[in-house]
Image (cartoon, rainbow, N blue to C red):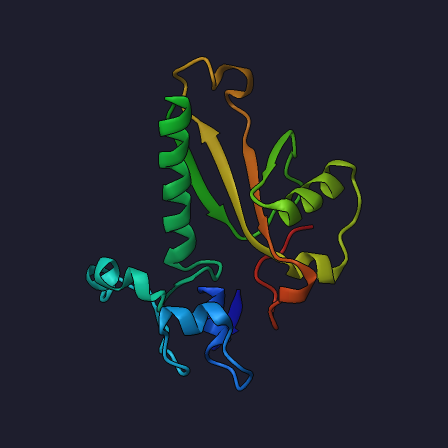
Length: 176
């Protein structure tokens, strides 16, 4: 994760490493990525070129709250749930959770799980922890299929977060 012009960008770590003044990592050198690799943010205008460029790792996804990258990630999660559980689901990105009934949650990574656990145990999150939240989603299952039955009607909150070392300069999402 990195910030660029007040946007939270998910880009290939090795490609980002090649952009700095420090020596290139061995993987960047092995892949032949130029030292000053240009990273383009994936948009509707350049999406057609993604597959021809995918092995260059020179495209990034904008995960800023309110932009289309989070909505696209939500669609991917919907498709994954449909494929794995054979049940429809709606996944919507949300900017914050205030007074939300946290009956069900899933950390989409270890940091998201730690934050979800803290919320589950009614702990207050300090500002630094809040800034580590990259994305929040509300997942609701469709009414068909046995996988949805136990939690039908309840929202499942999905939390994606960063480690302390990758905290962006601005707050990606509020959660308190």
